[in-house]
Length: 116
Image 1 (spheres, one colour):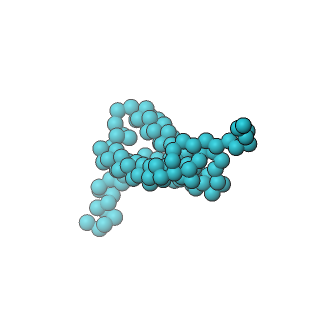
Image 2: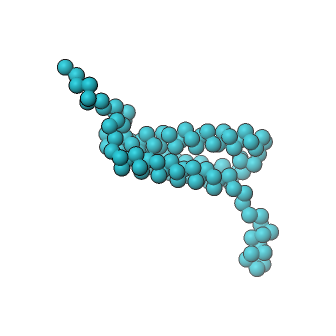
Image 3: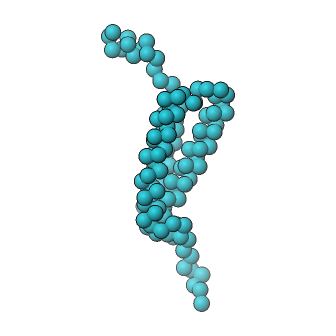
């Protein structure tokens, strides 16, 4: 007979979840560097582009939160430390999104600050 109190949800095995939780942020950082380099956040319809980037970061944050919570092998039940770390990572992703939308200082201002 199945015990109803033994509610376990396994999304990924722990090794896969741990690997993805480490690799995906590096890929995100690489993507954000390239998006900054080509200034996608300032092209075309700026509001639409920023909204799409925000939705991407939200989706990525949810996926990363689930992966971090699955590192011990089960998504439910989870350890409270897994939840706390997942929320910290989600907060850092929010900060990364906010920083990615900031305008870069102009070359003229940099030269003035450098004393050239």
